[in-house]
Image (cartoon, rainbow, N blue to C red; front, side, top):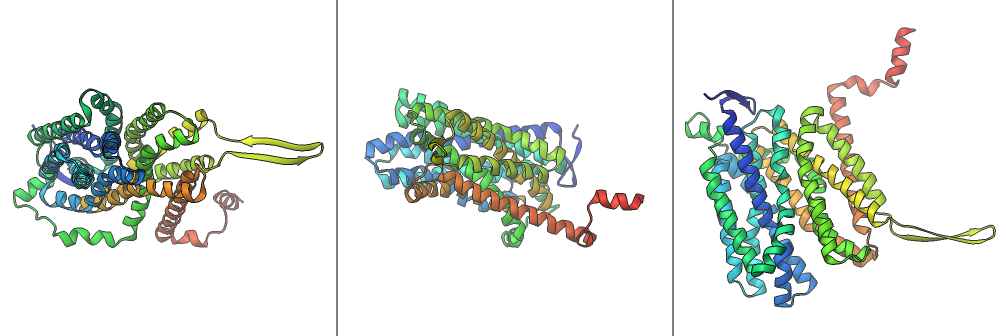
Length: 444
């Protein structure tokens, strides 16, 4: 017998079984989508050799799916709110599966880029899954369930660990074909196992009407939405950028071979994805705002330390020159990057905890634009990292940029919170004494 669960503050007939099926089916589907979305990080290496591409051409090929998956998120989120995530997610996966299979018929660089644009649709699965999953659960559980769904980022690590083995055995076309079949099968299973979300069921019954497209866009005029987007640009965009950049960084800065660097990068991706669940749970328990303070505070410290380049000093001493070097070894570097990834994951969940609370009727549109800006970070930042290397000539310049980004986000967030506090409690602006001083005066 179905129980009544408040989803988005509405009493809807939703059974616990339906909730769990929607959550775990969506999470699995997103994991497969993310694995497909990052497929060029592996098969692109062989395509580069086959076509004799230069580094710029290779970088564009790898980044193209990231761009498409980011730019489509806004529209996919809105369509999910209008016609339901079950259908949108299924069609999206089938289209991406066809495009992934279509890679095997291409023979030119232009053809691969065209197919990469369509393969990138898989990355839009995030904007569909967020509003679909959120509609099944009450707001006090949004952080946890959206954190679980977001852990599908682990699909990137799945590709990095499994695709090379498949490519050795079957070639890169075998990887594309297997990934395409897996995505198509996932689409069919998702459609068969899941149900229409509660809002879509009410629309089908004529109880509510879907919001027009332009009405869905109205919340985007709020500066708060773009502040959330900046948060996600750092916690998700920088996460994706580092996952792509770390192998190159480790081989250049520390002289590691590609295989070892790739393993370290994969091990970074796995916990940095799974800890998103912890971030969602913490957001429900202690509040998303507090988790964001932790995220930006610790990330700023980590990025500041990581941005310090290897430096050789010569000090004029009493008895002659004193020379010493300050540098971060591989082990401390790995530990700091792991801590940075951990708190980024907490922040990814905390950002999306805000959205259903502030915009319960526009999760698709707001979540779509936030996800779009975050995804664009994963596309833009690696390019900027390379440009900084050419301009400054220091390996740690990428972390210098990340420090600036997180400092801006932390500052903006803090002053926005202070402004809201003053709006709710005007007396704060007139108080000049600390609480303990006020208490002492009262006792006196």
